[in-house]
Length: 374
Ligand SMILES: Cc1ncc(COP(=O)(O)O)c(C=O)c1O
Image 1 (cartoon, rainbow, N blue to C red):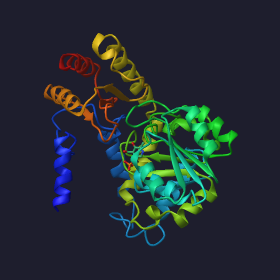
Image 2 (cartoon, rainbow, N blue to C red):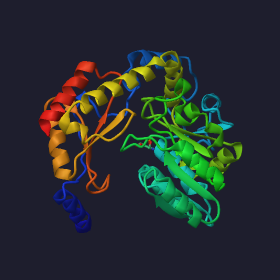
Image 3 (tube, rainbow, N blue to C red):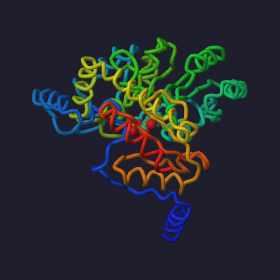
Image 4 (cartoon, rainbow, N blue to C red):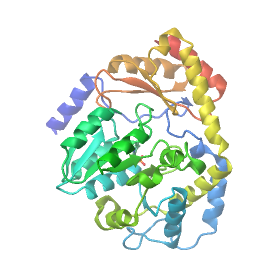
């Protein structure tokens, strides 16, 4: 126990101790609910209506997918997702973490190589660590470094990137990465966590938006961000999906999603199809925020380039980033500091997430407060 207590004390000393917090009184500028679907009462009623028509195991799935946790509803939903994501097949997972853990732990074999962007999400890194394949990272969005790493790789090569990076909000140069992937006969895995719902026709993400979906080995869509729900799905070939069903331990050894989650996903995508203007609305909020920031002397030099709902102000140092976040919170805005070791030392930041429900006045007041809090 002393060893554990010492490690916690060390975190406390360096200002990086993680704690659960609850501030429902503040204006949300930090959640991943970009399209406001998690709080949407109209969608809630649609979900309730659909649930009330269902029979059978309405409260829980009762087992894993390979045992009693399969159902006609989940199979139909996967057909729906295969169509939506323009893919031969789709497979649901309990979370994006599970989907990412599955793909990198199960697919690349001992003689193969995983190459991943240094900024990919922890779930992909954990998946790579569970794999017997060798693994390298490449510098963020750096095509030269990626090519050099591909040239050093052995066996089948799997390249893992995010379409929109969760901590920086920037895009991967997907077309150029795809070109390299094709040149070296590698397999591209794209985590679409932060583009699901927000880009693409009916919210089907960045790869479909760019029209490259059929060239991607595997796409991971998560539903806890723009869709305001929970769960994830991998879209890809029939062999990929059959392989995951057989070998992906985070898929095999867990109780599957309850009916309520499945209904929420179906209703959420149907709702978004009818309310696709939410995508335009979030883009106009991003535009307003960036215009206001770029109009200030102090913030314009701190803001990173990002055209996604994730906006980043670089503030070096855990203590400084925390102090500014606290000052902004004291004025009623929930923005959070992202500290090292979640990001590299020196790259600490305020991560500000924009939502369709943030009014223009709130965004203007937030920017003014940020200027005053520096
Ligand atoms: C890029 C990325 N991939 C995967 C995940 C994990 O998804 P989930 O929250 O559904 O487990 C996250 C969420 O934190 C993420 O940001």
